[in-house]
Length: 309
Image (cartoon, rainbow, N blue to C red; front, side):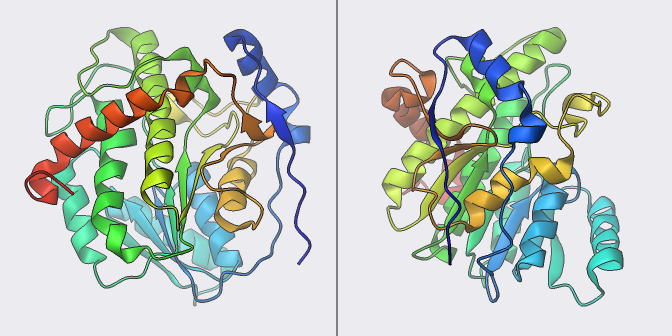
């Protein structure tokens, strides 16, 4: 099978230029994932798969032959999403949905228990929140951190034995992370700007998680993806004309989940391809990545067993 050539692009050093470069002409420059290779026989788990980029990621994986498990907080919305997919793609789609509230570690653990009999070949950490006001999870952690970072950390830790050699692990981040320099469980803020910064911090944490997961499992292919600026309504904002469609936004996740030439530990960008980060980029701070991992392990210890693993 012929592979799709991926550019390797140095990220601009200056934050403003970085953000403009990511947004500029993204519709024309966005990656388009090929329909091959097929994923027949593979099992894919997609968090937040009932809407937006997640729904289109599920559609793309189904089109390639995977059996898809949609992990979603609202089961009514999940059932509606599955019905919409079946109405278009066919009644016999190998598609199901499970309960998952990433902000609540009890829900995460329950979801993982329900998947103990599964072999997971593709794990897409797609779900995320952009808070409009400060909020706390049921366990008392800042809500963007709890949902975007900690919930995915625990879910993947609990499902670790279910992912074998060659598994694809795709964590959705965003280039807006470059506005942050820290990711902590206790960040406090006011107003919409604070909510944006909480989101940025969580997306930096996602990149740190990719680095540690890839070092921990060299037999997996762990990839961070920037899907683009997508008109998905994230953070309660109405979808606008300036963003990509959700179908286009899903292409980078699908590319990371399926294509043979995406290297382990890569940061795959919807317009820049494989991103080469500048030396002082916060995503490359391995000391802070290790600190975040240890903090997540500490917070998840009651659900992992004392001390984690």
